[in-house]
Length: 191
Image 1: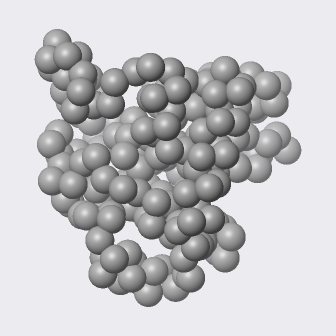
Image 2: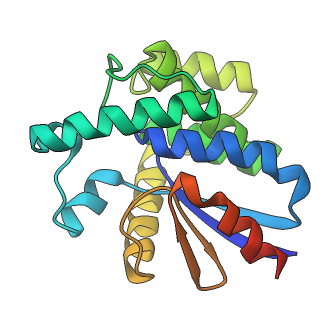
């Protein structure tokens, strides 16, 4: 069994695409998946890359083209301008970590909450929404401060390993970046 570190965030539609594909692949892979949520704002600051709202128009335009292509290709519908993006995702990621710790369902919950943000205009920063999600999932959320600290630590760890974006996977020290490269992840864990 190989260990795979998965660096992701809910604010990234690319992480949504990766998570949904990974859920389908998991039954065929003999891996231990380590969920590593990151703080995407800290990551972008560290690599001197603008957050989505601050990017030049030509980058914003092409981002929409790529999101549309991949949404159609993967048959994962998304809203290209969700009502609550970008959002403070710490509370939602605390639910992901709780689901992973308590029920070993963190990946599924990450996909569910990311889908809610990108397809249902859910406000992942809303306390009432998060309380309802915790009740539905039957989990007790990890403390927000603890989750924020873990996200920062994961972000630093990703940067120290040479990573620069999400989704990023590591199989041993082999980095695989991007939701469109999961075939390379399958190859890496099959060696």
